[in-house]
Every structure is written in structure tokens, then in C-alpha cells.
Image (cartoon, rainbow, N blue to C red):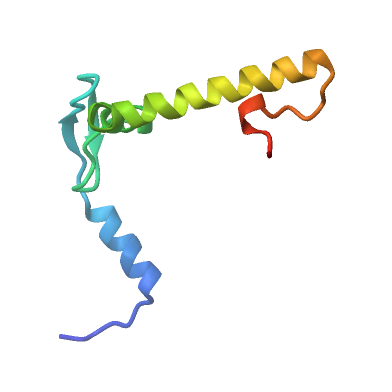
Length: 97
């Protein structure tokens, strides 16, 4: 048997060409898709993000809502300061003493 030397990228292309697509069902949307690699679980990045959010949100709900309330509060005070012409935009309770 004769050994033939090929470069790494050529070997990778040959291996990739031998992979056969496997039909899969997305657990989020139920859509059918073909997975070439063995790790594909979702049909798109959108479904992967939705699945992540469904796992993340129940565990971190309170801290997420607290950050959201703080952002809304800061935005309110910034808009109020701009409307009154104060220009600084920091809420009264956040100004340095």
C-alpha cells in the first residue's frame, strides 16, 4: 500500500464531503432540518436563542426584572432632566453629596 501525502486542509475537505446529512426535528419550533454535524440540535440561531431564554429566564427572573426596572428608572430621570434643561441627567437620589 502506498502512502500519499496531502495537506491538512485537503484532508478536512475530503472528510467533510463524506458526512451525510441526518434529518432532525427542532425541539423549539418543530420544523424539520438536516444536520450535517452531530451537535446540531436547533434549526436556526433564533430557535437556539429561544431555547436558551426558556432555560435562563425562570432561574434569573428576579435579577432580570430588577435590572430592567433600574434601566427604566434611569431613562425616566434622564429624560426628565433633559426636558427641564438641567443637562446633567442624573437622578436626584444619585447625585453626589
